[in-house]
Length: 425
Image (tube, rainbow, N blue to C red; front, side, top):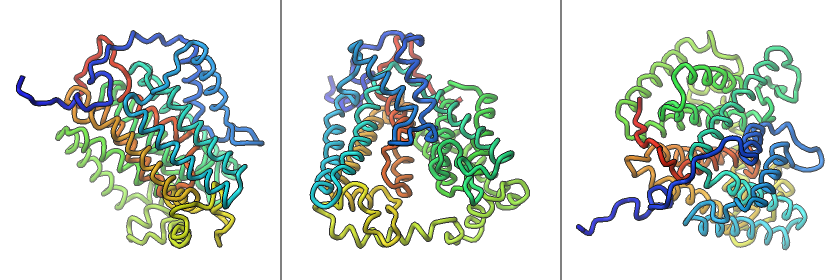
């Protein structure tokens, strides 16, 4: 007894807090099959109802919810001891939007938007979190496979049906089944990050990594998205830095420098035209006005700064920003949009959600035996926090699923025979 305290004393993760290990997972359970289908369909925003924002993935999530509830397997505290922070944050976000809608805006619109947030932020975590780690790893692989399918689907349309504006924008950018080119690029960046992480913990081998990365990288280039390109770079850098593996950091630095050199020198010879036009030109000149819609977004952001001066205490109400904007569109910045529509209380609630993710991942990040789990959690939270500088509302399930998969890997109880040595191969 020397009076010192280990990092596990402060953790929210069950395996470091001394809780018993989970039973061995069974992969043929009905709820896991339903969740695998839901995860696979989650990026496919095209598969949704015409009367409301209800996707095919949502249907399988609801079926899994009913089944797990009937079995008594639905966790009411999915974030462990951090659940109270999460629930308070969701309440604050929802309350601000509803209060603004009831007083200034449209209450029906407020209830609709809040219902979407509650489904993503309350129901989806109950379905994904507190699963055995082997199941979480399986579902992460399913999400990566889904994004590979989405990018292959998009590549086919880019090559053989470029005028099909369901999946290819009029400007020639790949949107695929996600239907939004920047969102497709951001999800691809997350899938690439997940793939690298799976390789680093020896869940996939190098040949499989190459098979996965090639269609993902090709699809990313076809989106012509600066957001997706820089998010991919940030994800890779965070994995290397947070891992603490010097050999990995040096290897990725050398590979990244070589890739940048080749791209800047000869990129126009092999890169897609849309990427050269929107991304490479901005990189070569340093002029962000060449980076697609960057200047248009800045106009909306400047307008939002003016609007939010009057919405600190009471917002405009959910989905009301577009009604007073001179541009007739919501500002593509989640933080400013929540401040405008839900006031400071909604924005603080949103910060609480991001902070909960850090609280979940940080103890494992500081633990030698479980560091790689915390690395994925914290890296994904950082990526999502950054991408929200270019989003409006973020309740779509294609954002929620990878978010909570990354948190689930840190919250999962360990397997009895689990090997903790996940050093870089």
